[in-house]
Image (cartoon, rainbow over all chains, first blue to last red; front, side, top):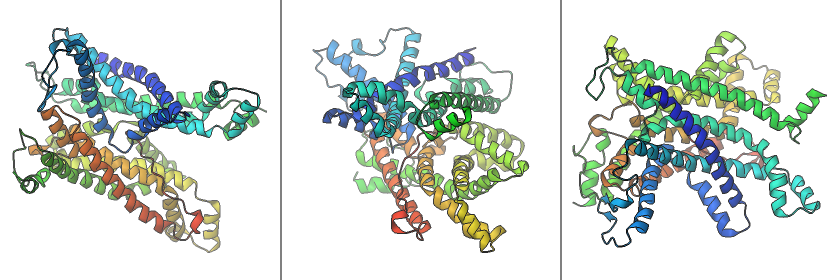
Length: 268
Length: 268
């Protein structure tokens, strides 16, 4: 039963991460082309910092770092009269009121918190990639379109929201759909973050023995469980491909690009 | 203990040479640099051999996908789809358990259950699929004039492929192939995080970085060290591929030469 829940966990992660990452990316991209220098630096650094480093190193790093950050903030607020150092040699010690989740919290709170951290990590990392794609897309919108908007007397803000943003999606979509595929394929990494996802259950249920006492009546089936996972991901990828192709066709409609031109010709 | 002694003790630890026990307390920066660097031997080993062997299969698969005969085309297409459409992580797991059960039947497969051979096979097939797709794309965009000129010179069959099509394909594919190579090196970090066990704690760079992060509860030292090593490795890869790129493009006029643009991918 838990195995089926785990599939739900993966889908939930995708459903939460994709919009949040898009939001982060949008923020990063708009910051990167801002006219205020510090804002631009923040945006550019955010986009640049995630590249060039292996992905899972990031996932392993961020979860601990975020956890410590949250606990440290709570620690400084809740226990102002704590005198010991927070980093004691190789230990990270905060007062017990600042522990996240609280030591006496029920099991499901721990699990949800772990899931939340994982989702946030995914969103931050993928937000940087999405930001890069969106930044490129914003640059790709033809200058003429923006100049026309200026000629009509629109302010910078109006140009951004009414002209640039609606038009950039066509240019962004190939990159974003690529990113979506990558995101799908990144979900098994949840396993590394300690969330009980499908990889975890495939290992557990497939094995001939469980670490906890019981012995399954079947031999080592992990190979078959992983084969099922492989097929699951392949199907998921295929479906996404078809759906994204449809969306692309819709977005291209009436745009001043080669594909849009081809569509017009085909319709005429 | 001086740093030099640490390097002697742990410099080749990932190959099982030197001190047997990993440091357990009083971690020094030197130990972290040495052990993580020693783990990089595995990353370079996997990346290099998978890349070299994968190159030939990739060429074959690309030609297969471009073939007219469906008996050749379909298997190539499926090969590429399966390896590009599923997470590498799951592929590692599946392969490991597949090799385990094969070993049960035929003892001849026993080397494949250890990382040095088994993971190499998976990475080889995986990079062959990814670069096969890149080469296929390049094959499709070979200028028509080039092949026509070859025909006019009376080149045909193998000579035409060897002298015209293949070099042009490589030339067009090289920037994307460089990214694939960088990306492959990043992907090698997954090996010891999937099914493949690190015997006697002979792991790769991420394995040791994770070890230190677990022991010290401080991710802010080992992971940046790891990142530093990987950035160095990436620079070396870019340098080597840049040289090849120069040679491939040596007949072109100076301004028509395309410079390598590095855009690493993310996760496979």
